[in-house]
Figure 1 (cartoon, helix red, strand yellow):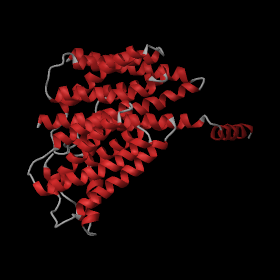
Figure 2 (cartoon, chains in turn blue, yellow):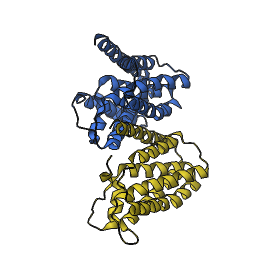
Figure 3 (cartoon, chains in turn green, orange):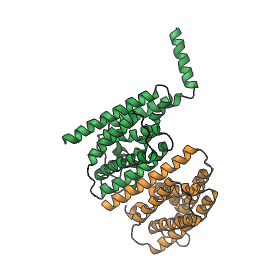
Figure 4 (cartoon, helix red, strand yellow):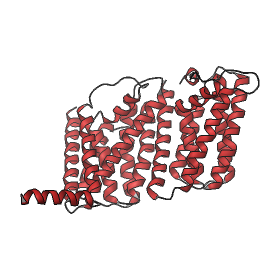
Length: 215
Length: 181
């Protein structure tokens, strides 16, 4: 009975307090990441479909974890990086995609993508705060590789703008997932969970590197 | 994107409402109006007033010229390029000189109006379809730029910049897809 009362008290404090929403946001975003992950390899239609554009950025685990890691690292870095990186990333990524669409050469794309997950994962794991300019360059270079890979794979279609907008929005939402997950750092146990998440992302990066090496 | 994409939808309520619906379901037009409204709002009340005065008027002039010329050509590359410029400026959130903003607004209005005019039905005198498009542009400009002007919260300003970034990125990708063919 006492245990039940204490549970009720805990829930009441949780819901009445101001700190409950990061937990909900974190849980929601985690589910949001995991559910599309299960569907990530379903081949969607052409560029005319908004859904095709929306699903394209989530069709590879290495892409997904890197995008989330950008948001997570932004949260670790704090202002102004937390908003500067999500503003700059889509534009640099789109430039990379343009290079890919025009089939201009860019060496080491797959290696760069694998390294992005590894490096960003390690940076999140270590809670590393680099100078803003260095952080922008690191993220910008990785954005270029991710954009290029997407550009090469983009399907032909009539409705280029809708496809592109859905594609960019999906990428931006993945950043938002990372930023919201990063909010758990406000709790005492939050930084430790963030470090574990960073380690997980780094492991995906290592796995991707092995895949690239084996190919 | 083919010119046919810009054809009016028929609401059943007449030309004026067809024009309103046309703007609301044409992504490139809608994104430009939203982007320009946010950009003008970022410049303060004067920017909003300037946009409200110039964009509907230039859009209408462009539309009239397009209906008169009726070239069977697509201005998609040009409209997408304008979209990229507007998106980048919104993402940067920099103060612009009034003359620069005015020039951008007039050019955008003329080009987008021209693109609309090529495909809108021709009517004797004032085209109700075009009037519907221009009215919708004016209302959207008023609502969005007014809201942006009064926005004080920092996270909302960041959201505006992110929206600009998304518009620019989508424009670059769309341009790439067009160039790829």
